[in-house]
Amino acid sequence: MTWESSSKILRTVPRDKAFYFFTSIGNYTGVSASSLKEFMERINDVNAKSLEFHLSRGDLEKWIAEVLQDTELATEVKRLQRFNLTGDALRSQLGMTVSRRFKRLTGQFGSART
Amino acid sequence: MCQKDRREALKLKNNVLSLDATDIDILEALQNDCRQTYMAIGKRLGIAHSTVYERIKKMEEQHVIKKYTAVVDAERIGARKITAIVGVYTDPKETEKVAARLAESPEVIELYTCLAEELLISAKVIAADQERLHAFIANSVAPLPGVIRIRTSIVTKKLKETQFSIGNELKGAHL
Image (tube, rainbow over all chains, first blue to last red):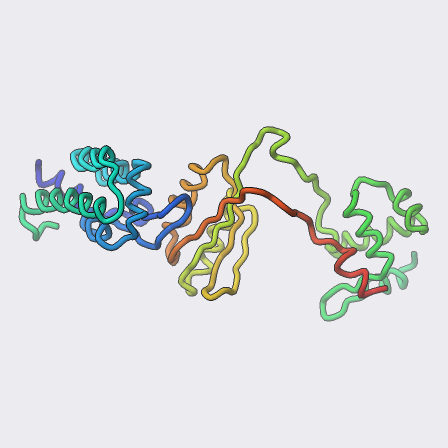
């Protein structure tokens, strides 16, 4: 992966492209993420119901693929759907998946570029 | 009706129009059926149709009567919609801006600011289905600066819907 493509995935997106965490239809938690780094951090503290809601709808991989343009991470997140994980088990698996990818992207060129 | 009578019929008190019993009876008749003729209203109320005409004209001029409209049953024409009551909690400094943006959205059919434990914007929202309702809230409401959180209730059954009724509100006070 080139530095340009890593930087693109790691960039901060505008407010209207951020990921907004909901717990159900129309119920916004007040938590949002504007970058992969923020997304990784929010996974640790957002209501687990929100992760379940978005994973079941395919919202997480959609945002990662379409907004962050990271198809590799989107595929990995989509795979988690198969395991029917809930609560902290889901939080843990999703957190590990995203942080692994984040470390790969930042470690490749040094953290100074995040 | 002479000018003096018309002035007396609609007196202004603290910038609020004071209606007499005849005005209220006419408004009540119009709220029941705004397509009935002046003649029919006059006959029912026992007054001349010219009086009905004068009073209605005056109330239109004074914007007591804002408009005549048709109430459409969306389900009968196949425009199935879901309705939701959306509570938008905001940073008080941004409430007016958020409300102004929501007011521009065609999905929002009623909009209020409310005093609750926290300052709240309450919106009645319609959408074709739950997915579009969610898309509207996620893409057009949550990203607005100052939105703290959103609570949405989807309406499952409408038990009552009425307009402001002049008869219930004013008749007792005037008669």
